[in-house]
Image 1 (cartoon, rainbow, N blue to C red):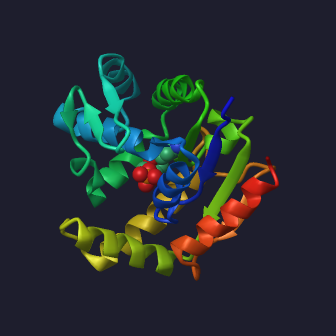
Image 2: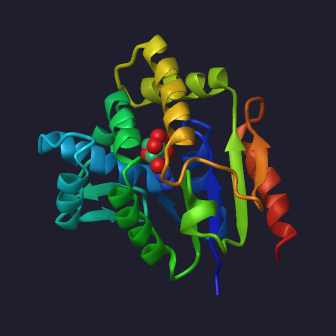
Image 3: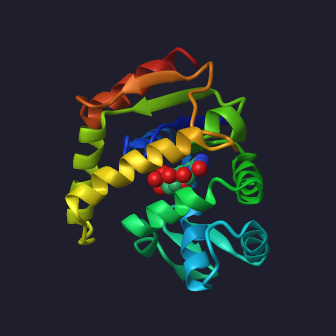
Length: 218
Ligand code: C5P
């Protein structure tokens, strides 16, 4: 049976890109768990629910339909929201709602259900520690704030999303703080995860390192 791979790390460390390429190479599926928290942030904005109203958010999630296709497109209540959830505002809203226990419980359960078939690469903040503690391989990707801001800006330019450079840097720093200091499942390297600092590495170099690590597991 195919097993699962966990990729965690702070925002803009390259997790999604690396997870997607890794999955492609192995014939696995990729699940971007950050996109799921972004959907909760996005839908709560549409519905006028405050990001700290835990009960209202839980109620909203109990009626929310979330689907991801094999190409990584994300659908909220049957409507594609792949680009709407990528703005700076939605990054912050995702980080805000992700602090709440009831929100995390619901998404973690869904992520575990999806991955139970095996053959998944999941990326997020708590995959190695909470979602998939038995993952075959756990990677913890890190990079300097400068390197991460440059990558985020490149992504915004490519996707035609408006941005302000100082705001992008501030957003990374605030989210780092929030994600590592929250009470529920803070961003933390699992004891058995392997850390890779991608600040000065190309995507291909990171994939190469993971390839090498995978060989030691087979
Ligand atoms: O990875 P991405 O930047 O899209 O994640 C958005 C936010 O969702 C993060 O800042 C984090 O607060 C939250 N998140 C989380 N647990 C995950 C994935 C994302 O708390 N597994």
